Length: 101
Image 1 (tube, rainbow, N blue to C red):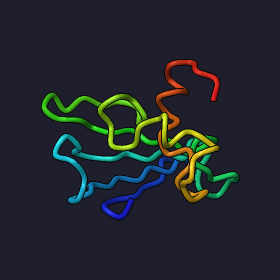
Image 2: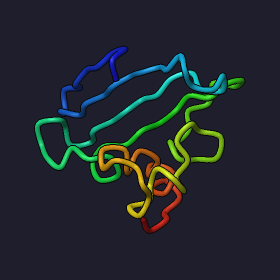
Image 3: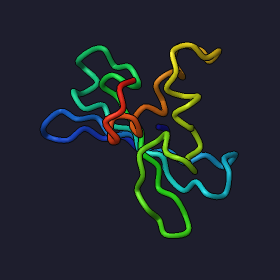
Image 4: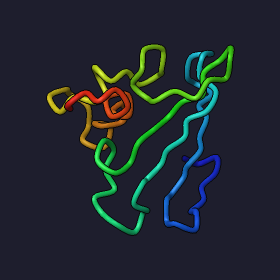
């Protein structure tokens, strides 16, 4: 989230990033902490979620969806071998599809 950050009047935290090392399909990553960074748990998959803007149509999609850089099967699984801070990065797809995660 080092390309830009802001907080809206309602307290929601927004972070924007792009990653030169990511596949060419990725354009921007947008992170949203829905209850604001001052309120816990500040944890991906609980109150903080990610979106991605994909080429070629610059479509905003939930992180974890097929084609995103952080697939839900890996990045929304408590039983994976990822460090704790990476678990939950792909959960927005499950939230938007109503999947119990």
